[in-house]
Image 1 (tube, helix red, strand yellow):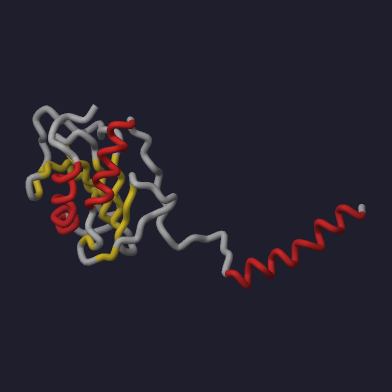
Image 2 (cartoon, one colour; image 1 turned 45 degrees about the horizontal axis):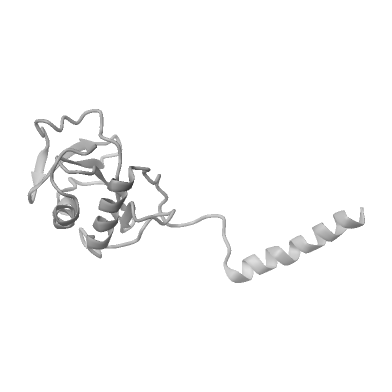
Length: 157
């Protein structure tokens, strides 16, 4: 019983420390699933992460959690990039039935919430960009130079 009281007596102190330090169980940054591609694709994604712009569609870079070189984000609501994702079932890489923005082919899929999910085609790694609303073209224009620089043309494994 004495041990039980000692554990409980420490809880108010812990709560006060958390309050003073600004601890919170809620995080106001976006959270996304981190892809788990092959080592070769991870290296391409790291190169992409280093080449990404600090602003996309006028929004400042604000990466989602958990921190990873395979994910990036801009603004709030966030434009989210995930590198090394699986090929979407709707994609046919052999004929690239997708749109092209500044030399990068994209499969653009309208989402139920009015946003878009855009995935690169004909690149050695699949890069997915989720745009919360609008047409997504401005975000893709800003991201295309980095994709061209870091992810070589070809068919992803």
